[in-house]
Length: 127
Image 1: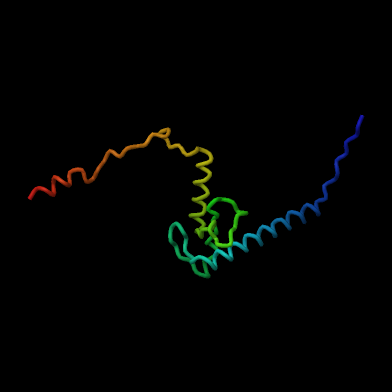
Image 2 (image 1 turned 90 degrees about the vertical axis):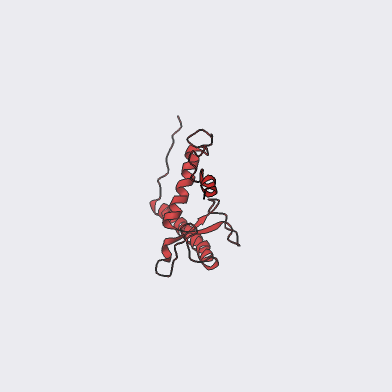
């Protein structure tokens, strides 16, 4: 019979590993965030809310292709968004992944039934 022994987990080493990973991730995020803030005006790309030094922490960098490791020097994968718009963007992605691209009509296009200008030509011809 083979005896299997489990190595005791070194909690201190694990804590150091997690702490170092967090510091590394935060430094990486600060790097592209700082570059994006220097490159773009401090305005949300969706709702056009303007930011200043007092509320700049509420402005986030959104990766357009959702790949946080793709950070080209020209900033083409970045977009500055406020927290609300950033959350909305990620919610849209999650819904797309969960439900797919099809609409509730199984791909069929819904046609508009109301035309506010339907009788406009006739009304313009009468004087």
